[in-house]
Image (cartoon, rainbow, N blue to C red; front, top):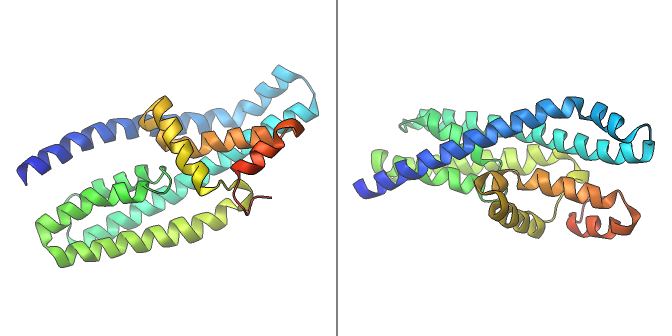
Length: 212
């Protein structure tokens, strides 16, 4: 148990440092996006076709980041409150981890739940651990699969295979930061492909079945 706790603390420290870098990256992207359209106009003049393509990419990425950030914050808050009700130690910390790891598609919520559930099991017993697991499952299904999906809309969809492959590629290229930002980066690439007739078919293949 002591060896497991030491390993968890060491891994948690590295994870939090990466999460802080990702959070700062997202903040600066959102700040920069508000003035990026003016930069595009200065760079490309008044060419409306070119401007509309790049503005579509910027607007979709900004929309994704704003929705994802708000949904991640709600997820972290609900998780923290649920764990606090069960008396799990450091409930606020586990809520923060759930907020940050929610940026990783598909497996982020699982990674966030593992250390909190281990602590609940060691400190409170198996029944409390199962109760916490039910809370994680309910929050991620309701927020991730229902609320977030409706807010995102169909036009921002990526196929499940593309999401997984993009996470592997960007994680290899940029490390943990790339894993967390894999979806907005890939989405920008997809929109860029769809904006040109010669590469539109690539963007269509990258999208989900519900994409227009």
